[in-house]
Image (cartoon, rainbow, N blue to C red):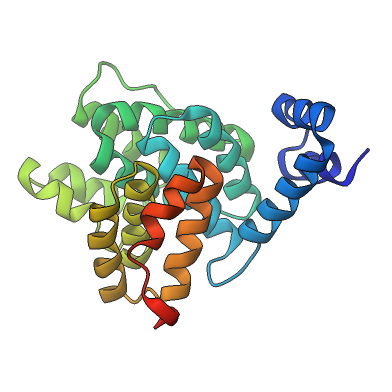
Length: 235
Protein backbone atom coordinates (compact mmCIF):
# COMPACT_ATOMS: atom_id res chain seq x y z
CA UNK A 1 0.00 0.00 0.00
CA UNK A 2 1.36 3.44 -0.92
CA UNK A 3 2.10 6.07 1.71
CA UNK A 4 -0.96 8.06 0.55
CA UNK A 5 -3.32 5.10 0.88
CA UNK A 6 -1.85 4.22 4.28
CA UNK A 7 -2.27 7.79 5.49
CA UNK A 8 -5.94 8.00 4.56
CA UNK A 9 -6.65 4.54 5.99
CA UNK A 10 -5.27 5.78 9.30
CA UNK A 11 -7.26 9.02 9.10
CA UNK A 12 -10.62 7.56 8.07
CA UNK A 13 -10.34 3.92 9.14
CA UNK A 14 -10.68 2.84 5.50
CA UNK A 15 -9.44 4.17 2.18
CA UNK A 16 -12.20 6.33 0.62
CA UNK A 17 -13.11 5.66 -3.00
CA UNK A 18 -11.99 9.11 -4.13
CA UNK A 19 -8.53 8.42 -2.69
CA UNK A 20 -8.31 5.04 -4.44
CA UNK A 21 -9.24 6.65 -7.74
CA UNK A 22 -6.66 9.39 -7.36
CA UNK A 23 -4.09 6.69 -6.64
CA UNK A 24 -5.20 4.75 -9.71
CA UNK A 25 -5.05 7.66 -12.13
CA UNK A 26 -2.40 9.93 -10.63
CA UNK A 27 -0.48 8.37 -7.73
CA UNK A 28 1.99 11.26 -7.85
CA UNK A 29 -0.87 13.72 -7.34
CA UNK A 30 -2.08 11.69 -4.35
CA UNK A 31 1.39 11.85 -2.83
CA UNK A 32 1.47 15.64 -3.21
CA UNK A 33 -2.05 16.02 -1.84
CA UNK A 34 -1.28 13.73 1.09
CA UNK A 35 1.77 15.79 2.01
CA UNK A 36 -0.23 19.03 1.74
CA UNK A 37 -3.11 17.70 3.84
CA UNK A 38 -0.91 16.22 6.55
CA UNK A 39 1.04 19.47 6.77
CA UNK A 40 -2.05 21.68 7.03
CA UNK A 41 -4.10 19.42 9.32
CA UNK A 42 -1.35 18.61 11.81
CA UNK A 43 -1.03 20.41 15.13
CA UNK A 44 0.19 23.96 14.65
CA UNK A 45 -1.03 27.21 16.15
CA UNK A 46 -4.42 25.50 16.03
CA UNK A 47 -4.66 21.86 17.07
CA UNK A 48 -5.73 19.11 14.71
CA UNK A 49 -8.92 18.74 16.74
CA UNK A 50 -9.72 22.43 16.36
CA UNK A 51 -9.09 22.26 12.62
CA UNK A 52 -11.42 19.28 12.22
CA UNK A 53 -14.11 21.04 14.28
CA UNK A 54 -13.74 24.17 12.16
CA UNK A 55 -14.15 22.06 9.02
CA UNK A 56 -17.23 20.38 10.48
CA UNK A 57 -18.75 23.83 10.99
CA UNK A 58 -17.62 25.17 7.61
CA UNK A 59 -19.09 22.23 5.74
CA UNK A 60 -22.31 22.23 7.75
CA UNK A 61 -22.72 25.92 6.87
CA UNK A 62 -22.40 25.17 3.16
CA UNK A 63 -24.51 22.00 3.53
CA UNK A 64 -21.75 19.73 2.29
CA UNK A 65 -22.48 16.64 4.36
CA UNK A 66 -19.85 14.37 2.81
CA UNK A 67 -16.85 16.42 3.94
CA UNK A 68 -18.55 17.32 7.22
CA UNK A 69 -18.85 13.64 8.13
CA UNK A 70 -15.18 12.93 7.36
CA UNK A 71 -14.11 15.75 9.65
CA UNK A 72 -16.60 14.74 12.33
CA UNK A 73 -14.66 11.50 12.65
CA UNK A 74 -11.39 13.41 12.80
CA UNK A 75 -12.73 15.69 15.53
CA UNK A 76 -14.09 12.83 17.64
CA UNK A 77 -10.90 10.81 17.19
CA UNK A 78 -9.03 13.92 18.32
CA UNK A 79 -11.01 14.10 21.56
CA UNK A 80 -13.84 16.51 20.73
CA UNK A 81 -16.95 16.35 22.89
CA UNK A 82 -20.54 16.40 21.70
CA UNK A 83 -21.08 19.75 23.40
CA UNK A 84 -18.12 21.26 21.51
CA UNK A 85 -19.46 19.87 18.25
CA UNK A 86 -22.92 21.31 18.90
CA UNK A 87 -21.57 24.81 19.50
CA UNK A 88 -19.61 24.79 16.23
CA UNK A 89 -22.73 23.60 14.44
CA UNK A 90 -24.79 26.38 16.00
CA UNK A 91 -22.40 28.92 14.48
CA UNK A 92 -22.95 27.21 11.11
CA UNK A 93 -26.69 27.53 11.73
CA UNK A 94 -26.21 31.26 12.33
CA UNK A 95 -24.89 31.51 8.78
CA UNK A 96 -26.97 28.99 6.87
CA UNK A 97 -30.20 28.71 8.81
CA UNK A 98 -32.31 25.59 9.11
CA UNK A 99 -30.77 23.84 6.11
CA UNK A 100 -27.35 24.08 7.73
CA UNK A 101 -28.75 22.86 11.03
CA UNK A 102 -30.41 19.88 9.35
CA UNK A 103 -27.05 19.03 7.80
CA UNK A 104 -25.36 19.51 11.16
CA UNK A 105 -27.68 17.06 12.87
CA UNK A 106 -26.14 14.32 10.71
CA UNK A 107 -22.76 15.21 12.21
CA UNK A 108 -24.16 14.91 15.74
CA UNK A 109 -25.81 11.57 14.97
CA UNK A 110 -22.56 10.21 13.56
CA UNK A 111 -20.53 11.56 16.48
CA UNK A 112 -22.88 9.91 18.96
CA UNK A 113 -22.56 6.60 17.12
CA UNK A 114 -18.75 6.87 17.21
CA UNK A 115 -18.90 7.45 20.97
CA UNK A 116 -21.48 4.72 21.54
CA UNK A 117 -24.04 7.24 22.78
CA UNK A 118 -27.79 7.29 22.06
CA UNK A 119 -28.75 9.71 19.29
CA UNK A 120 -31.94 10.74 21.06
CA UNK A 121 -35.33 11.48 19.54
CA UNK A 122 -35.00 13.08 16.13
CA UNK A 123 -36.68 16.51 15.93
CA UNK A 124 -40.30 16.51 14.87
CA UNK A 125 -40.88 19.03 12.15
CA UNK A 126 -38.49 21.60 10.76
CA UNK A 127 -38.21 24.75 12.85
CA UNK A 128 -35.69 26.50 15.04
CA UNK A 129 -37.26 25.39 18.30
CA UNK A 130 -37.40 21.70 17.41
CA UNK A 131 -33.82 21.63 16.16
CA UNK A 132 -32.44 23.49 19.18
CA UNK A 133 -34.50 21.32 21.53
CA UNK A 134 -32.98 18.24 19.91
CA UNK A 135 -29.44 19.49 20.56
CA UNK A 136 -30.45 20.31 24.11
CA UNK A 137 -31.91 16.83 24.67
CA UNK A 138 -28.78 14.88 23.74
CA UNK A 139 -26.45 16.81 26.05
CA UNK A 140 -25.83 16.01 29.69
CA UNK A 141 -27.43 18.51 32.03
CA UNK A 142 -24.12 20.18 32.87
CA UNK A 143 -23.31 20.57 29.14
CA UNK A 144 -26.76 21.70 28.04
CA UNK A 145 -26.69 25.15 29.66
CA UNK A 146 -25.50 26.96 26.53
CA UNK A 147 -28.25 25.62 24.27
CA UNK A 148 -30.79 26.11 27.08
CA UNK A 149 -29.86 29.79 27.25
CA UNK A 150 -30.31 30.11 23.48
CA UNK A 151 -33.75 28.52 23.70
CA UNK A 152 -34.80 30.93 26.46
CA UNK A 153 -33.56 34.01 24.62
CA UNK A 154 -35.80 36.15 22.39
CA UNK A 155 -35.43 35.32 18.70
CA UNK A 156 -33.86 38.68 17.89
CA UNK A 157 -30.99 38.09 20.35
CA UNK A 158 -30.07 34.55 19.36
CA UNK A 159 -27.63 35.33 16.55
CA UNK A 160 -25.45 37.35 18.90
CA UNK A 161 -25.69 34.80 21.71
CA UNK A 162 -24.53 32.00 19.42
CA UNK A 163 -21.11 33.69 19.26
CA UNK A 164 -20.75 34.15 23.02
CA UNK A 165 -18.25 31.92 24.79
CA UNK A 166 -19.66 28.58 25.91
CA UNK A 167 -17.59 25.41 25.96
CA UNK A 168 -16.13 26.87 22.74
CA UNK A 169 -14.35 30.23 22.93
CA UNK A 170 -15.53 33.36 21.16
CA UNK A 171 -12.20 33.33 19.35
CA UNK A 172 -12.83 29.92 17.80
CA UNK A 173 -16.38 30.90 16.87
CA UNK A 174 -15.18 34.02 15.07
CA UNK A 175 -12.49 31.96 13.34
CA UNK A 176 -15.26 29.65 12.14
CA UNK A 177 -17.10 32.64 10.69
CA UNK A 178 -13.88 33.59 8.87
CA UNK A 179 -13.74 30.08 7.42
CA UNK A 180 -17.39 30.00 6.43
CA UNK A 181 -17.18 33.27 4.53
CA UNK A 182 -13.84 32.37 2.93
CA UNK A 183 -15.15 29.06 1.56
CA UNK A 184 -18.29 30.87 0.38
CA UNK A 185 -15.98 33.25 -1.53
CA UNK A 186 -17.24 36.23 0.47
CA UNK A 187 -13.88 37.86 1.06
CA UNK A 188 -15.18 41.20 2.33
CA UNK A 189 -17.22 39.49 5.04
CA UNK A 190 -14.30 37.17 5.84
CA UNK A 191 -12.17 40.28 6.38
CA UNK A 192 -14.71 41.73 8.80
CA UNK A 193 -14.73 38.52 10.79
CA UNK A 194 -10.93 38.49 10.83
CA UNK A 195 -11.08 41.82 12.62
CA UNK A 196 -13.52 40.37 15.14
CA UNK A 197 -11.30 37.30 15.58
CA UNK A 198 -8.29 39.56 16.27
CA UNK A 199 -10.32 41.40 18.93
CA UNK A 200 -11.10 37.99 20.44
CA UNK A 201 -7.40 37.15 20.66
CA UNK A 202 -6.67 35.39 17.35
CA UNK A 203 -3.17 35.78 15.97
CA UNK A 204 -2.31 36.35 12.33
CA UNK A 205 -0.83 32.85 12.21
CA UNK A 206 -4.08 31.31 13.43
CA UNK A 207 -6.01 33.26 10.81
CA UNK A 208 -3.62 31.97 8.15
CA UNK A 209 -4.19 28.39 9.34
CA UNK A 210 -7.94 28.88 8.94
CA UNK A 211 -7.30 30.08 5.39
CA UNK A 212 -5.26 26.98 4.68
CA UNK A 213 -7.91 24.55 5.90
CA UNK A 214 -10.35 26.47 3.69
CA UNK A 215 -8.01 25.74 0.77
CA UNK A 216 -8.24 22.03 1.58
CA UNK A 217 -12.01 21.91 1.61
CA UNK A 218 -12.93 24.49 -1.05
CA UNK A 219 -9.84 24.94 -3.22
CA UNK A 220 -7.43 27.77 -3.94
CA UNK A 221 -10.17 30.42 -4.47
CA UNK A 222 -11.01 30.10 -0.75
CA UNK A 223 -7.37 30.88 0.06
CA UNK A 224 -7.54 33.90 -2.26
CA UNK A 225 -10.49 35.26 -0.28
CA UNK A 226 -8.89 34.60 3.12
CA UNK A 227 -5.40 35.82 2.21
CA UNK A 228 -6.68 39.19 0.99
CA UNK A 229 -7.35 40.23 4.59
CA UNK A 230 -4.23 38.76 6.20
CA UNK A 231 -1.75 41.38 7.30
CA UNK A 232 1.60 41.66 5.54
CA UNK A 233 4.47 40.12 7.49
CA UNK A 234 2.15 38.36 9.92
CA UNK A 235 1.86 41.41 12.18
